[in-house]
Length: 316
Ligand code: AKB
Image: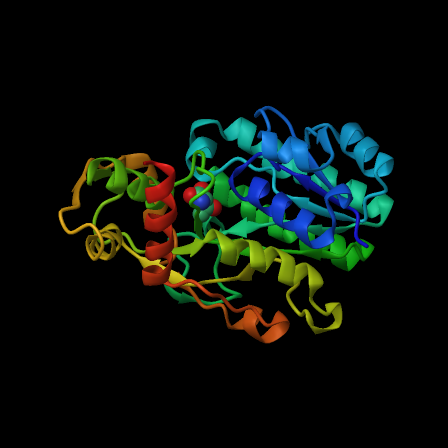
């Protein structure tokens, strides 16, 4: 049985991924690593928890050795909007933190999953059907750290044979956890506000198309790629994965199928708009499908039904 450490287990994807991994591999075999944010009762009560600051290499090594870890899901990261406000912090966590975790993985012979993002692309990248291998010249600190991270993971595999794997996540939408500090966060907020106020003021403008994904598919991708047959992986890291692409108007129209008087207006945030404008409209994920059988369950209508149903009960 795998012995897993999840860094960033208190974050949006981390907390839900930790719970899924505990279900699949046993509660005691999945250590939740967190740093500043207080972990939920659910996370604390269902298995081991350790304070792991990925910028502290010694601490990462200590926890990996203490629990005999063989697989690390490294999810601790600073997202795009916060990275623009705090580039220093973003470099430290996203690059130095990743370097530390890769070094520990090399030393302790661990496999490692590291997500990249649509943020690894830039204005000169083809925006439609963005190929797996293409131009990557991002102009954000988040993007710079993501491209460097992809290359670093490739390097650790080639040079040290560390079993590094990863995907490029789109914006992730969840009915359970809120995102923090991303450019795609509007696509989560809008559902909450649709239920609470039947109105949402969007910080990205109409016509801003971005890749998005429902949380269950994002979690499935993380599990499936780590279970994939290693000999079939040509790319290993930074696989494009895609399930849906929409702009705020399309999302609002879908919500109106269930809440007909829902209203959408705009108060555009220039920083996040500029970031979004530099990201693809939709990625081509054929390499993921061919190399490890990537597939998904949720499109926009199916996700919207589920989001509104679950949030409707929760926010009552
Ligand atoms: C963000 O908006 O920063 C993230 C991402 C797409 O990587 N959700």
